[in-house]
Amino acid sequence: NIAYFNDRFIPVDQAVVPIEERGLQLGDGVYEVLCIYNGVPFTLKEHLDRLEQSANAIEIDLPQSKEKLAELAWEGIRKAGIENGTLYMQVTRGTAPRNHLFPENITPNLYLVWKHGAPDFSKYKAEGAAVFTVADERWKNCYIKSINLLPNLLAKEQAKRKGGQEALLVQDEWAKEGSSSNLFIVKNGHFKTPQADHSILKGITRQKLITVLNEHQIKVSEQPISLTEVLEADEVFMTSTTMEVLPVVSVDGKQIGAGKPGDYFRQLTAWYSELVA
Ligand code: PDD
Image (cartoon, rainbow, N blue to C red; front, side, top):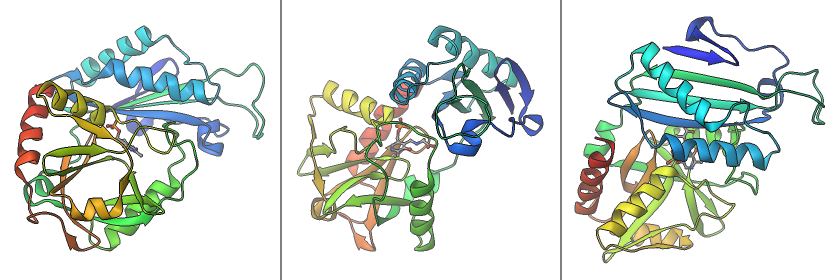
């Protein structure tokens, strides 16, 4: 496992960041998580585009061009000899004496971490996952992949303590997304996922699945989903880079559909495996 900070590669356990790094002190930064399959960073372009969009949304310019960042991503994969793993990318405003205001003439910091292996969701893909609803207490710019993850951490931890694998963030009666994943439901063959406005992250896995479904003549409605619709769905999924497609078989202890991973889940998983192969 290796890391890269600003201009050099370094083993992860030796890498440190300056004490007045603004990501560290102020959460003043954005990030991405990619999966590496068979030595290839999956949807690298999409992740770099979103990294740039997130950075620009908080008035940070990427410290390197996207072409250079892509080269770095590949270089790290080769150096670490990763077949299957993950790549974490973070860009922050830079290092400067602590101040809420943006320091002038500051250079953004880039840090990357390559890891062998990815979190293992096979048990929950086989048996189905339990999710628990948590009130969505995040800010109004969740389309920015900000490193400020406290509400997400608190939500996932709360779900875990109830015996679940993911939190379903709910605003009023609306189910928005997971603490680190997007939401899909199917009812009578109709797929739905919440519209990607500023209240959720526009997931790259979500986008890939919409495309793959469309290619198979299945439409996906991007519109608000009520919690009732989730509870009455035939199948429910959470999707993310590291989870891929996770079948949800209960919400707050109430069974979804047949209470086990369904046919659409199996079909989607098969299509997703073709994409990453
Ligand atoms: N999280 N919604 C939120 C709030 C997320 O943090 C993520 C990803 C997603 C799914 O996005 P994508 O399909 O592009 O991974 C949705 C990453 C994996 C993380 O924080 O570890």
